[in-house]
Image 1 (cartoon, chains in turn cyan, green):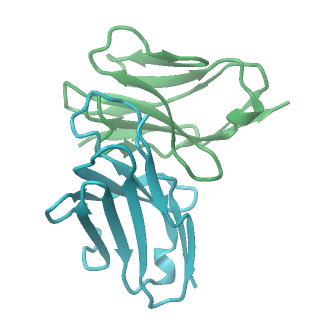
Image 2 (cartoon, rainbow over the protein chains, first blue to last red; image 1 turned 90 degrees about the vertical axis):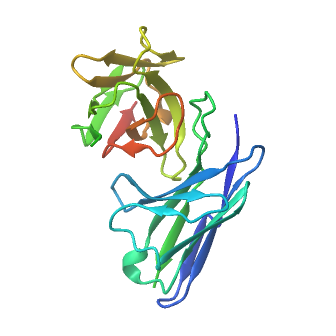
Length: 117
Length: 115
C-alpha cells in the first residue's frame, strides 16, 4: 500500500516556540491531507483538511492562526504549531486522502508526539 | 451529523480466544464506509478492515471479521484466536465510501490479551 511519512516522531519544545511537523506521501500524489490531534487516552479528532495549492479548511474550534498548515506540493503538507503552550502537548497524526481512489487502505503517518514544557 | 460510539473502554481476553469489540454509528448518509484501526503504544494507526455500506457480505481479513448489521447500525469487530500482540487500542471510524478521507473516530477500546 501507499506510504505516508511523518517527521519528527517526537519533539519537546519550550513554551512560546513554534514547531513544524511534516507529512509526506512517498509514492503517490496527495491533493488532500488531513491533520488529526489525539490527546492522551482520547480519540483522534480531525483538525483540518490540507488542500494542495489552496487554503486549509479548519474544523470548528481549531485556531487557524495557531495551527498553520501549508500544502505547497502534491507530496508534502506541514503543520506548524505557533507559540506553543503546554496545552498544545498532544499526539498529531496526518493522513493522505485517497482522492477518490477506490482504496480502503489507510495512509496515516507515524504520528508526532509533541511535548511543550 | 455522523457519530461513532464505542461503549467498551477496556476489554480483556485470554490468548487464543475470540473477542468482539462493539461499534455503533449514526449517519443520515446512504453511502459510507466503516473502518477499524489498531493503535499500539507506539501511536501508529494500523488499518485492519473495511466495510462499505452497500457491501452485502461481512468483511473478513485474516483473523479479523466485521459483523455488520446495517439495520441496527452496528459494525462490531471480531478478532479470532487472540494473540498477545493484539493488545492495543482499537478504534472504529466512519468515512466516505471506499476512501479514507476525513474520518470520524470513536473513543476507542483498549484490548488486553493475557496468557
